[in-house]
Length: 542
Image 1 (spheres, rainbow, N blue to C red):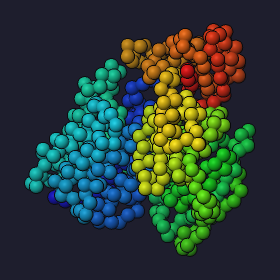
Image 2 (image 1 turned 60 degrees about the horizontal axis):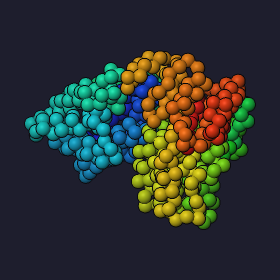
Image 3 (image 1 turned 90 degrees about the vertical axis):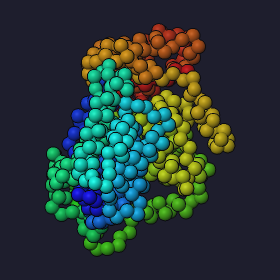
Image 4 (image 1 turned 180 degrees about the horizontal axis):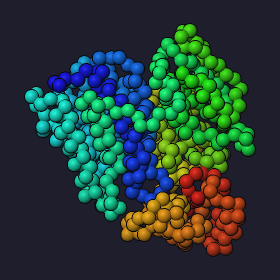
């Protein structure tokens, strides 16, 4: 084959998304750090799924059109650093194909080379031995290999071989990978994507291994703009003793697998939803597990135009004057959410470890602020890139300032430092400087036996983590907390803010409140129930 059109490219990209879906748990398992947040595979899977939905029903023969739609879907659905970098690779891939209806082998090589360039530019401090290395080395090798005489099948085979070889070398470039005995998880995900593309190119399209009941139904009749149903509802959440806890990014992921044209707007105890789906009953049953409907509308898409509950609500809001400023914060846990709101945060994006929000989640919450300037607090190192990409998407619309908080305690301090009467420049500086001397720590359980940075970790024991290093690993979570604070608190420490997680019992909480003032009498403690998942305790020491 000497060229590709849009439909062949579409099959390659869909096959890639399916292959990643089939293998993402294996990619998650490559996580180096033994904490329960090995979500590289899941983040990449959700990112690719978002791109696949954009091209699934497209019949374009134009290769650039398919590549561009796929890239746009990836960008909006990108989650975590691995998902954002993957979206940037295909953003560069697509932009290189502009105005090209068919792809020749040299175009193919140039597109991946540009994908590498764009991905590197998106990362502030690129690290070798990662997904970036895999795309760079493989694309460089492909550029040196191709000529007009080489078929696209041979070029793709060579490209995949080089990507695999690059992946094998990642432990030599990143010592922590070698110590733990794994290859880079993001690089493994990328190789899985390329393998899926190659398989389809050779006539072996990869299907998903597992098909849900809803997916079985949708495979019979394809959802389009003229069939299925437009479902819209406003849901009042709770009560807590009768309904499930609402976590927006999980809710969004479920809806994403059941439909398209999805919009979700959440505010305090209310959620507004718009979705096009073939199975409205399934959607409504799922939604009702979180609350009760205050308004509901279902319309057949075949009937043509329909009015939108959400649009009417948003239009009314858009008639109001813009606020001068607002703050958006990523948070997880009811108590944590409430505290952020207490200190002036306008919008909460549900997310954190194991559940990174998508770029679209962040964008929708920024827009919902209806403000001239919006300050965004990512509160997690794996969400910072997504926040910056959201700001980039909105650059011509809203002045978005990303304050690069990498922990919840940093986010709390930064939000508290905000002054609505100060200038934008002063607020950015004050918020960034506010947590410069803050120490952040956490306690969580180990998911495997390992040795990392020379420290021995035992599965199911509770680790105390300080400055991204494991410094404690013991059977008891409260003991782990006390030993961790021994290393975090010194003679200059004056305030410890402690958030208690959802797994901590009332008895354990009482012991913490009793023990800490005795053990550290010269420090003031602010102990709150955060009810955050994954982490038994989150700590900020000032």
